[in-house]
Image 1: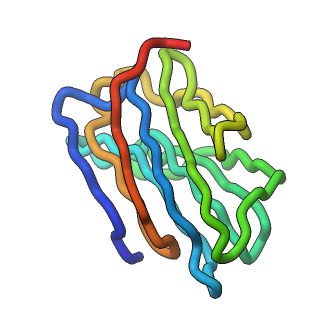
Image 2: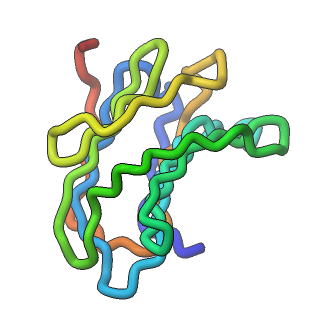
Length: 139
């Protein structure tokens, strides 16, 4: 895995924070990942994983040293070398995922204490042009 971006927020990234990533996948992209991590206990609260080889988006959580049940979004709006903007916003119940300002999915929180989500990471096959992390009012 190749780490492309990482940011920590010790006071917690959820709920109410928005993560916006602008970038494009390289021509030979296999997959990339965005992970919302609970640093203190090695949990991944939200794993967002577009897989170009499967034309699928896989989402999951890693809790108690195990991956949970995968959720898949079979709408695959990504193309090699095509720029995009992803926004992931968290409220008290879900992560909401927008691609180029259109909602493509939501993912129900699988951990209880959202304030323990203190890090966001971007990994693997993506060229990042910008990242923005901001506090937003609830939708």
